[in-house]
View 1: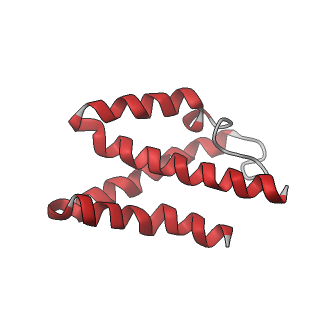
View 2 (view 1 turned 135 degrees about the horizontal axis):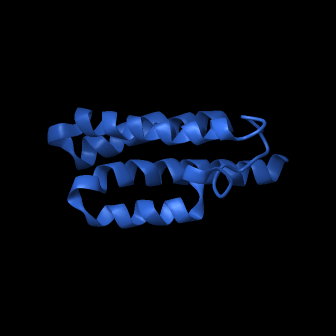
Length: 105
């Protein structure tokens, strides 16, 4: 269930947000949302790279609370707003994973 929800929130939900809120440019917006998943490159800095019981929010540099605050500030400017929305949806998805991990680990 956790993996289904995780991948739904990473891939399907952003496409729905793009389609319903940015209908005229939904494909372009969706691709930008997908590109914001590059924020997961910071997982490569961790050892081990993957730990099923680790919460990425607050652990990895681009998933830190300071970084999330920057993503919120980026909502202010129209030129960075789409990227900020994508990053914040990503952080929310990873935070939901943390709740699941707290139950199983």
